[in-house]
Image (cartoon, rainbow, N blue to C red; front, side, top):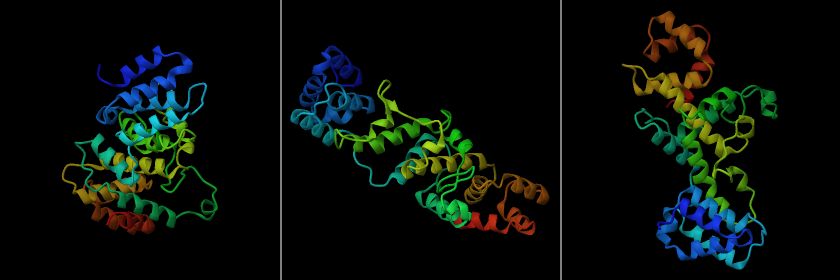
Length: 278
């Protein structure tokens, strides 16, 4: 039978509780490198659990050798640029969207622009309704993890990012990223439990920018202007942008809206957009 998560489950379920690590060893040692490389996250997590998490939790030299073989051959290899991974997964999740300007550099400029504008109490660690380097709130995070948006991509991101860390050692703090009943990545409901991990925050900020870019798409609007409106809405400028659009009778172009925003005294907000969109 082909080696997949279902076959791994069948074999592990059939093994006595105190022999599941031995069966996991047998599965790994009997598999080709190609078979191990084709395993999905569930298959890899089931094998890891049997080797390192289930009673009697005695991690033998044979367990270690099997884990080493699994780690070496799995498709889940260490990520060198997590922000680039996030951007790629977000773009892949929305293949029909114009995400050509959703880049890791854009997210980095968001962080810089937000940091420049932190209040004194935020600089000393007292957060308001928006939190983290990207200064997002719970509503933005809820949008990101909605299944119609980027929940699946976020789950894949967690797998790609943290399974390599999980497989490094049997003694790890990374186990909490998964539900070992469903063998799926755990998506926290509260953003306050997420943003302190910079790598998780990177995904959320990039994904929320993607949502705002989608919302800013209009027929006749240039790609750059779409990005400008998206960043303005990311920054919480919706009401002032709508007012400026109505004042100049232009719902498409950024330039007349920018002039009107400055006339109304929203100079720093316009500067924010121009700092982010180069």
